[in-house]
Amino acid sequence: MIEQPSPQVASSKSAPLFGFWYPAVPSNTLRPGTMKGLQMLGLPIVLCRDRAGGLAAMRDICPHRGMPLSFGRFDGERMECSYHGWQFDMKGRCRCIPALPEQGTLQTDKIGVTTYPAEETDGMIWLYLADERGHIDPLPPVPRMPLPSEPRQSFHISLTYACTPDDGIIGLIDPVHGPYVHSWWRSDARMHEKTKIFEPIPYGFRMTAHRPAKNSGPFHWMERIFGGPLTTTIDFFLPNQRVELMQCGRAWLANRLMATPMSDMECRIDFSAYWVGLHWIPFGNLIFRTLTKMFLGQDERAMKHLAVGLRHKPSSMFLGDADMPAKWYYKLKAAHQASVQTGRPFDHPLKERVTLRWRS
View: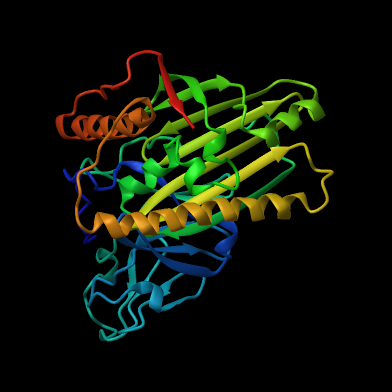
């Protein structure tokens, strides 16, 4: 089969990382017998779900003349190019070229398009986008949410931010922008010093279990309702995920933020929330979803404004403990790229527990 070349690991600091699973779309947005075109890490991709619910993902480019396959038709088994009618099955093999004579000797199934492993979990469709090593056998498992039990309620929100891949990801782990970007939630007048302990985890770092800050009023009343101390654990791990788990007595709330690069200056932000407790609040799902949209919308506006300044290519400054998570991200990214390029084991930049202090 004729294959497109595999993506290469870029040396640019702002380039996205290959060799990981990335979230593509929420599961419920791709119905049986439909396809959807999208862009991830600068790659054109078409997702398909056959009539039986099976998934396929492939390069959204017809090898004949370069027409995106997502502009064509999908009958639940084959995609048909809208330009000359070439047809491809769910494995990316060409099954029909209408212009060829019926008695021709050309084996069309030797022609194909690059395919990407696709899996479905936690309400999302995930794609594995290989680095210069190609597909590792076996592939690493798809990241799963560390849920204490089956959630009672959940929701998912996606937004597109105008920012570089690195700025989108750093925005997930920045601990001190709250009083300025989300001033209705935390004002700068209520800022005080905080102490957090971090420890290494595979391909990332963890803010260990801690009580909510004094200026996190909405969480303190949860302790009174559920009769137990509320603790929060926050993980970040490559390539793009921040996972937070809050537990209080019999109740818990988990959320995941992911910044997936679409192009050099666009990131898709996916937010998923799952919880047990508070199900008795009237319209609780709608209320929490609305508040989350407000939060993400404020971050979206901040990223849009940041992009205006970054057009002038200023250098960045990293000062104090509050900027350590961003520095760790860049070091983790560099360590992964070095491991891929040299074949050596991943050298984690964070060797032991570290205590950080900042004001927010």
